[in-house]
Image: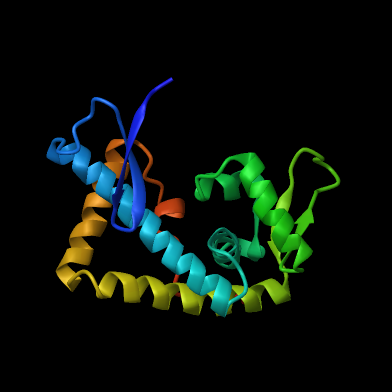
Length: 184
């Protein structure tokens, strides 16, 4: 079992493995700060969504992906892949959305192994409401900390990391957040 030493930084308690310097190299510190910045921003966006839209961040992300999908539905496995979630995790999130009437599960009669999640009309309304809160909250947090060029640099750097690791996928990494497809 690894021993850790606790340090309270940035209003968050952070644990460094014993033997790892708190004054580590720039790469290690960048990694630690990336995680901290993500946790702080995620908590802020999540709070805003829960307070103003009545859904959590994970639920909102599922609603956004379904709202932008053809026929407003995706296979559960594709949804999990796009959100980088385990099957069990996406199942729990979709369960909560089904309980709220925002999503229904569909299973083709000719393929009992495949399960789709489909957005309902109530889910579309919830998605639209959550999207407005999400976009505003993310902008407030980033615009208050970064200049326009900084945001572009951050995006470029994150893409480089994802591409180099083989994790870049346009469907996952560049979803339509601001608007959804229109049905004909």
